[in-house]
Figure 1: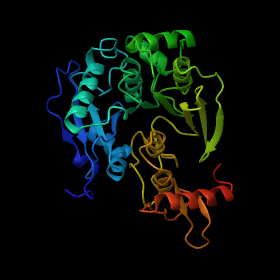
Figure 2: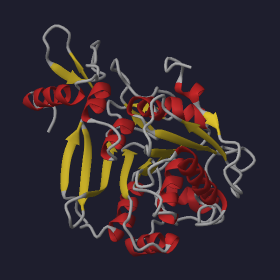
Figure 3: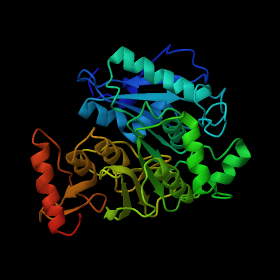
Length: 354
C-alpha cells in the first residue's frame, strides 16, 4: 500500500498486548521506512473520537511517514465510556498498575519489544480527555516517557468522579500548587529524570477552561524546579508561547495559548504540505501543534513546521502566514535545513518571526 492512501487506512490493530485491564483497543502506524530503534509517539484521541479519526485529523501518521517514527493509537470502547472518553477522572483507570493506564503501558511495552523502539525516545500526547489521560500517563509512568504534550487537557489527580471532572473542566474549585504537585509525586513514586511537558490550550475554550493549562504548569513546575514566571515569552503566528527552563538551561515546560480558539487541536492546513485535516475538534488555527510538538521532541525539523504554517506569495515573493489567501507553501525536500534557514531569515526580516 502506498502512502497515497489515507493514514487511517494504514493502521494495524494489535490484537494482544497483555492482560489489558482497561479493556482498550490498540492501533499501530509504522512508516514505510523505519530505522532500527525508532522513536514512538503515543497519541490519545478525545471524546467521541476514534483512533482512525484522530490519526487522520491530527496528522501524526503523515508526519511519522515523513520522518520515520512509529505512532501508537490507544482507543476507547463504548463499553467503558459511552462517549468514548478515556476515563482520566476514575481513580481505578488513572493510577499506576490499574485500568486504562496499565493497558496503555502494556501497549507501549509490546510495541517497544516487537518493533525495537528506542526506549529513550517515547512520547505521549492527547486531546481533551486524551490530553488528561496523557497527563495521567506522564504522572503514573514517568520513567517510560521522555516528553508529553497535553492539548486542551487537565491536571492529574484533580477529580475522582464525573461531577468533580466537570467542575474541574469549568475551572471551579481549582487545586492549589502544593496539592497538584503532591498528586504528581505520589502517582509514580519517581525520583527522576522527569518528562518534559508541552501544554496547548485555546483562549476561548468553554469546554475545558484555559485555567486548567495554568494548573498543569503549576503541577509540573515543582518536579522541574522552575520559577513561577517563564524564562522566555514570544509570539508564534499570533499566539503566545511561554518557555520554562531547568537549571541546565533545557526547556522542560512550554505553553501555547491559541488566540481565539475554542475546544480542539490546533492545525495549519492551508499549505501544499500540511499535517492533519480540519474537522470537529480539529481546528484550523494557522499553527500546527503536531509539527511543533514533534520538533520540540527532536522528531521533526524547522522545515516541517514551515511547510505547513508558512506560504509564499506567488508574484511578489513576499513571505506571509498561511491561511491569508491563495498562496502555495514551500515544500520540504532533500535540502530541508538549508531551505528552512532561508525561509526563517526572510520571515525575520519581514518581522513575521522572532
